[in-house]
Image 1 (cartoon, one colour):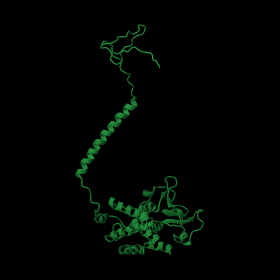
Image 2 (image 1 turned 90 degrees about the vertical axis):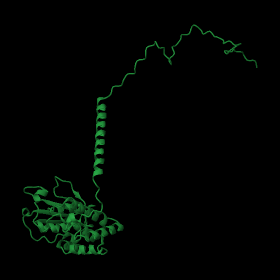
Image 3 (image 1 turned 90 degrees about the horizontal axis):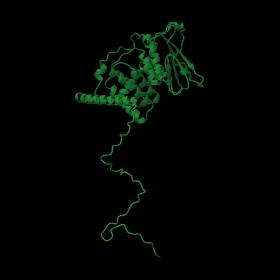
Image 4 (image 1 turned 135 degrees about the vertical axis):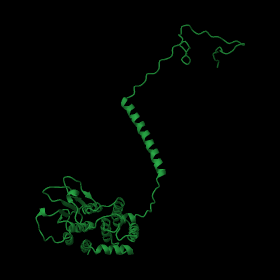
Length: 320
């Protein structure tokens, strides 16, 4: 099939063919390379910076600079200070910690609980009768030896029945005196609650929850003063008794008993030479978990020392 022919634009006979462009078309300047005589294009408009953003950036740079300086200072101090041994024996520090025994005169309740003219300070505790907080009952007996306490036991409507021994856990309240002659009120309400709760001022405080926390508060009413090391050890033993000895697995309970046996091999009580809230909470945890019979020798001896005290003896009657 015949095709039309197009005249070639390449060399023909050694000469380059020159085509004439039409004169009716306008020419465009070369945008890739402007002539040197042409004016330079105007710079792009600069965006205005928000002053608040600029201030924030400056503040961030200043904070980072101060943090870097602080890190350098801490690194320098860490090279100068030796890290204490984790197995440091604090027995000597505990023994030099001076604290008065629990049989001395009572502390000023107004300083600890606040002064309230014309009203008796009443500690109200809600507890579940299915798991009675034995440590709080021991502390109640100890407080009765120190202060004149108006004790009362009630049953909440959320509980269908309460054993007779729990209703009389504070003993027979035979002596009735005017309310203003007492120093402190102690009211126990058997109620369907997941964990013990305590309040002594309904208007000014939120409830304290947990047997260990309430025990710490009640023991503080004795006005005992400890140094930082002793206070830390007491808190550690209280948490260990609640979360591992009472609520932990059998493996955890065994580890706690071994630790207790080692500690009681150095001192007659868990922390030092005087009874503390750690001994009360740990003894009650052993009684409630049934681990007392499997306790090592030092722990058995310590338990007998606890049971020789009248407040522990009264609580043991509730377990029978």
